[in-house]
Length: 398
Image (cartoon, rainbow, N blue to C red; front, side, top):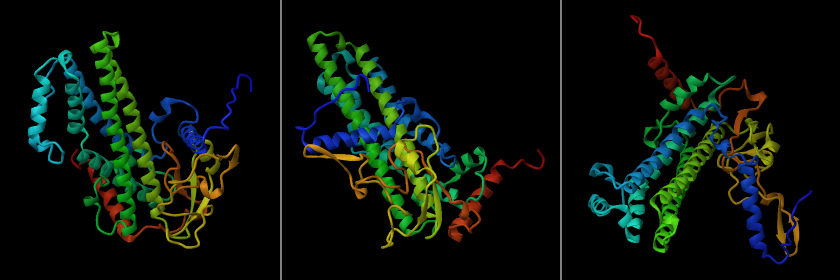
């Protein structure tokens, strides 16, 4: 290839090389076309499209509130009072919030000390993204998506119209306490609890990135002020902070797409009886090389504890790519060797990687089979549809 560069990595430690290969392989899987706009396209699984947009709006709203508060403080405006009822779960008590607010509003931002700026960053995170909010949003994301996966599994034939599926998205539960008894098995509930905690970890990571990013930008701003550089102006600080939040918005979108996709796919598999045949669908723009290679493949569902399960032939609830490698090769000494099959990605029950938009459908031979769901779930879904029909019914005297 003309213009290609070759690097001699022979003396670079194996662990450093292999870590770099893994990061590059995962990045290429997440966005193989290098198009940053692709993350904003609606989710390709119609059963979860509306839910992903809803979760995205909820997560972005939190970031918008932080941005608004930042804008106010940079303009010397009050950052607002906080009622006691709004912060029952926060590590800061209401008195701490009030003292921090008063301290920050007593002086204009151009007179802020470094400690004042650090206090502002902590104040905003504690107010808008505390642990309670993170856990609540994670539960909202995962419970509904898991139920939608079971609804998809109970359907036969073509998917319902988009407005019907959007209605299902608004009617399905969003908290564990609202899920009717016996709708989910103990194993399904445990998998959903795991999914919730995983989502909370990812949202928490964005929270820490927001805090660390704000503090890093502010540190550089204060240093530039001391040195009399142009980067020390309030306008430059505002621009950098808002650029930072633009990336955080993308991070929140990625969480909505990935975690909802994970739960709806796992929910679909959870609804299938052992022996059912399911087909993987990865036919969407932006699918990576690995996902394209598994599009249309059929697998047999088995129990998670089946001692005879096969990673290449079976799919089971909870099957993931955690701990497996996206990179085809690894460096050992001075040479590159192929990774063993047991080290590399296999077909997971949920998404294959962040931003994956794959889905499951029943294999053609299963389409006329009885639904692989419990009578309790069938009754639950029938009641859900009845509620929807009642909500949209036109009164007789209209």
